[in-house]
Length: 132
Image (cartoon, rainbow, N blue to C red; front, side, top):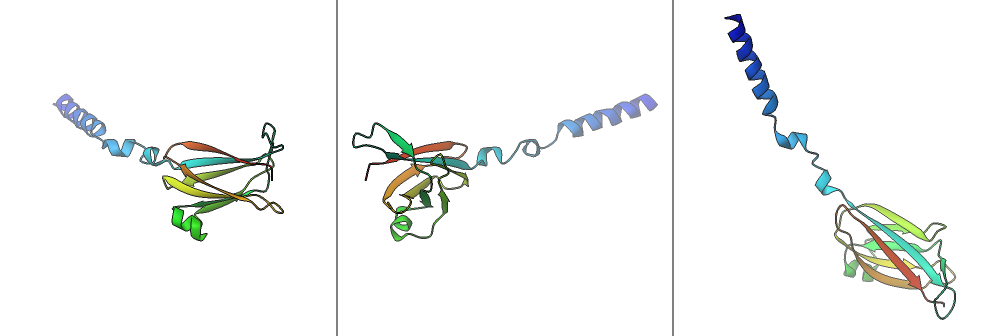
């Protein structure tokens, strides 16, 4: 009799343990991992543009649509390139961004780009300014 009770209790425990909701076991953020974007800004050193230098101090502005970029606001993200001419944006939640890339003063020139930023990816963009 004791064996039947223990066996029934064991079977019930095993059923409960194996019947856990699979959604609890999965990481819900794994499919929602935000995108990353790395921008590198370079400057041509000659007219042929066969020699480049990294451009530290360039400003990168990200906008969520073309109209915001043309109006200059609202800015979704902004950053400044480091000594290697690179800036990295983390945790981007939109699938597309419109960028304004502005050279540091006294140059001050700008370029415009559109970039796709799918979830769970890192997008790399290289921007080259011609010799001014």
